Image (cartoon, rainbow, N blue to C red; front, side, top):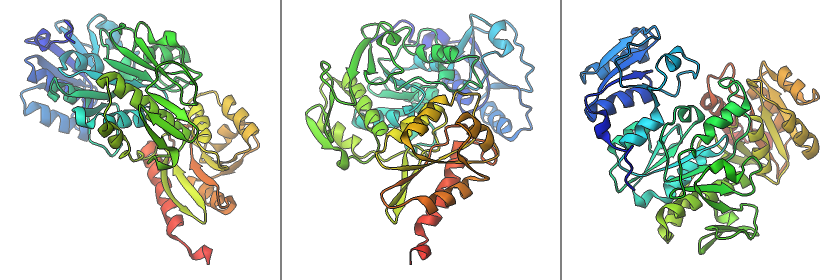
Amino acid sequence: MSRPDQNREQFVDKRLAVIGLGVSGIAMCEAAKAIGAIPIGFDEKTGDVPGVMAAFDRLSAQGIEVVTGWTGQLEDDFEWVLVSPGLPPGHPVMSQMRGKIMGEVEFAYRIAKAPMLAITGTNGKSTTTVMLYKCLQDHGAVLCGNIAGSGYPEHVLTEAALNTPADGVLVAEISSAQLETVISFRPDVAALTNITEDHLDRYKSFDEYKSAKLNMFKNMTDEQVGVYNYHEHSLRPEMYGKAKIQEFQPMGGSRPNPNTLRHNESIVFSKWEVKLDDLPFVGEMNYTNAMMAWEMACAYVGEPDRQMLDRLLEFRPLANRLEPLGERKGVRIINNSMCTNPMAVIQSCKSFRQKLHVLMGGNTKNMDFSPVRDYLQESGQKVYLYGSDAGILNSLLGGKLDEYPSLESAFDAATKNATAGEIILLAPGCSSSAPFANFKERGEAFRKVAKEWLKDETDDK
């Protein structure tokens, strides 16, 4: 569908300031140059910082001007100011250049020739995005956006928008930070996995965070489709604006016209029934993700084919996202390091019917952990709190849980308590804190200690 706001000519010979020279900023500079604009890259870090130095060399070699050690002010002769997602929403340039601010999603949307299918939400969006990519792999799908570390062929959103032909399709994970600067962006098909408290280190309130997420739908009309999980309590149909809603029920039910049906211990994908035990992923959370991805794929292609399902069944769990690591003495190990907020803990735990030994720890980000406290008291799951902030988290969870100085010592305690048929689950519920810089480092540390335990059978003899 042709839209007047989607054309590259609007940027020809226009001066564009690109703020932030991370991967998104570099991609926007290069794409702007490729379509005939005049980009100038800005970064507040000095030129002797390794990452900035590499960006400077790369862009300068293409004839793109770069300003390092930028003080935060701009001349007023720029047509647009393209901001990277990492720029704080309260940065002075946002008010100084009000009316000229365009984010990465908006710019990518405007220069794209291919349609875009977009997923956002607090939890599950990376897995859902990759599942959708698998479904549409034979329909020209390109995996792009905020997704990182999936193990699949990922592309920066702007780069994908520039290079994907009109007969391809952009399958994009979109973060709340990327959605803050939406102007006319409207994907052909969009989905919201859920929306619960998170990123309160960036936003002043949950309502502000929620408002950013819902920008996904603000320009959609009944010519576009919003996929809606009827059983997700954090969602309401009115969140989808004027989009045509395609509803599904992951817990089973008889709502009209879904492309997926939950039937006892199976999922029906259109006309094909697959037993849960035959799916290449585990947990109720992933079953819901798969149903959402299939609904989106069907909304895009119309009549699905068997090859789409075969591709979905090739899916393998993403690293750090309900990632099975192995089993020993009947005890399974699951790595969900990407679980970084309270509701993700509850969803992760509810994905399994077995008794759990849950490892939690990190930076609580001023979030409300009372729902987790209530869930743990009702469910009776065994919890192991680790790290320097374990005492803070313990107070938020009722103050009666066991604390350990490190992730490794918490895991060791869990292996001594767990018995056959039970699961040890890393579900931190917090962002990373020392000694881990991010969820990837945390997941790798857990993976290492788990692998050592899984292959060490001396205690079994």
